[in-house]
Image 1 (spheres, rainbow, N blue to C red):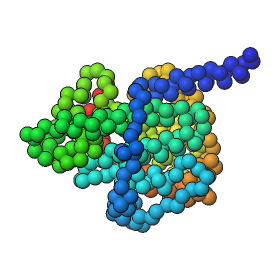
Image 2: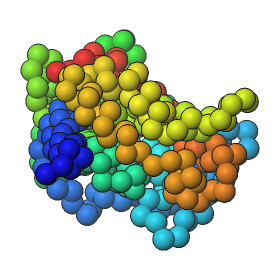
Image 3: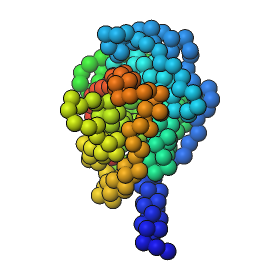
Image 4: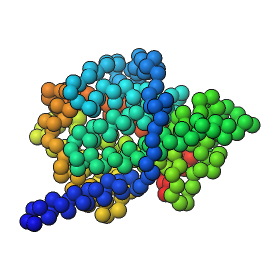
Length: 305
């Protein structure tokens, strides 16, 4: 076997191992069809009231990109449907957003796509927990509690688990898992809160990458997606990964496609159009990320083991 063949084999082996370590493990669960989607009327309502997230130009529905598995229009729909109440995030559209982001990563090639497999495992954990809670609703809520819950920051917010179920939203999941003693602040567990934190960290990485990809420098040539993705990783997920995983990530980013591929993936013709589409996506991700960050921070969950 030649030197190049050995090097290629070594890269594949490292990436396979990296895929299992990317978000520090998980269980393989399944998601029931009854929780997979959400009401189309709710999507339309969210889109019609999404100007706060879409900027001054107001909401504009993106068209379908034919012949592709990843659809940026669907990603935007799911993201815009996620915010609820004043500071909460609905879990069904949140997880559906991840379904589309996984397709995005898979489209970048087999090496980059290996990263998405652990994300699928993480979303499956939360979906399985939702199914279990739905099968045993009596255990979800303390019947003596009120409809508002105080966070560690002293704020009160409406508790949707009282009406919609434990895993209806980020805040209802946090409240119920704390009440049931499912969150361990000292050792690793498969709680929904710990799992959400891993997804939350990965979402920041993708948000920064897409934001960098949308940039149009005033002078100089556009930087390669590989460099931009590596840079976003170093300031986010790399802070939570071991040396070995960081090195494996570097290998994965080498296989990142060139910028023209992203034009085709998002059905745009040039960098200006790419910036416009990704700008909308990044703003929508930002709203979801900030709300999740606040909920986790209020409950001291940003460093769950």
